[in-house]
Amino acid sequence: MTLPLDILLVVALISGILLGYPVSFTLAGVATLFAFLGWFTGSFDMSLLGALAQRVFGLLTNDVLIAIPLFVLMGVILEKSHIAEELLETMGALFGKMRGGLGISVILVGALLAASTGIVGATVVAMGLIALPTMLRNKYDPSLACGIVCTSGTLGQIIPPSTLLIILTDVMSNSYQQAQFTKGLFTIDTISVGQMFAAALFPGLLLVSVYITYLLIRAWISPDIAPALAGDNIKKPAVSEVIRSILPPLFLIFAVLGSILGGIATPSEAASVGAIGAILIAGARKGGSTWLMIVGTISFVSLSAIAGIAPVRLQRSDSSSLDWINGALCTVLVVIGFFAVIKAIQLIARKDLLKPILTSTMVVTAMIFATILTASIFSLVFIGLGGDERIQWIIQSMPGGPQGALIFCMILIFVLGFFLDFVEISVILLPLVAPTLILMGHDPVWLSILIAINLQTSFLTPPFGFSLFYLRGAAPPEITTGQIYKGVIPFIALQAVGVTILWFFPKLATFLPELVF
Image (cartoon, rainbow, N blue to C red; front, side, top):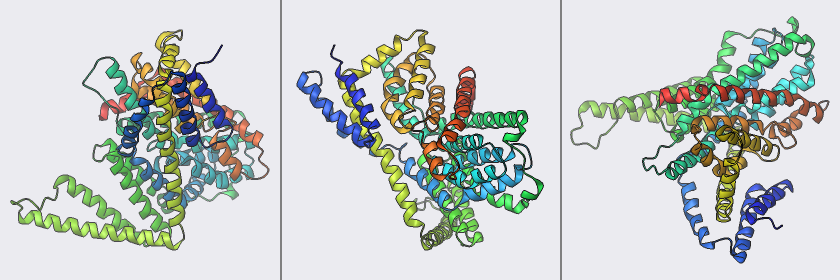
């Protein structure tokens, strides 16, 4: 029996990816090939490709996705400023004297870095170079140590601000609108990045709590696998050291998430704030005047507050003397902040970090947008071949109704995570399954966070889990690949525990968005 072209299209895509071809080229190439095959066989209307121009324009003008390069820039700057090293050393000194304390410090640092940088590779590599050798020297079980480093590094995918959450917002919002149109509704609700960030906050902290609880139980049952540091090996850090290490990421977290959740700024504006804050922090780390950076920060914060309370509108004919004084004050604040930023950029450039920062930002951003763009081509051809109807039929045919359909989709996403990364799954699979799941009655925000935790697991699942590759490159020579794989297995199970808790307690994801928005 001849397989339909939509099924052959999916098989060809997976085969191309497994052969090692770049995902974006594989998506576009396979889709183009099957568009012509469908045209020759009379099963595809080539006029559908006329919608590509609109899709490209929509992608380039998407207000949600504009935040991605800015958040990537913020994370890369903080990576190059070695904030991870300082955090790890300080937190390790704080918790090292308790059983399992080093592991707890790594998890907490992973959470802090997730909320301030969100770059999985940078976090895993930094902790693999610093924390892993320290845990091994203090007789931690190698597999457990590897599992802790890999898993804590992936928290950047679920704890906001996160690139995954921004992409999910765009995909799930479109799916939600599509589902409402299907129902015949014309007053359309959407999902915002702020809602998604708010929804992910408690589940992200839930995962941190699950990891720490597991580590404490393991250390209590088997003290030898996660011993406390000996007194001679650790020196309690001074309060000033703790503040210097922890305050900058906490400031960024407050500035970025606080401005979004408080309704003060859009995601792209908040990402701009985060990028400027990261530049000022990096400038202070690279030999600049700490006071200059503090004054620059205060000037920007004051400017935001004044603009919110009394906006400067000097073009009005009824502007008073007070308005002109306000305008002059804001101008001074802009000049001070601008001078601090320029000084910080000069210091970064002198340390030969500016070019690597910009290059890394462009590479990551180009990869994400190329995948999203070419996935549009793929989904257009797949839909033109009738694949969306087949997916809808499969999901609706699952036993167990809406719950059975969701379980099937979650298992499918989990299995695909062994071979694909989160961007590919998000932009290829989710637009096909999410509208049907929403039509079956699942809350789109809760559904998004369930999927986000599942997608986070794709970083840990062999053979293509990115965290495993990152740690393999940074780990000491005595660590084997088998030990890394063995170490992440319990944490993959803990991810399932997190999904289960969220499944039965959906308010963990929906409470904060409902309260704030």
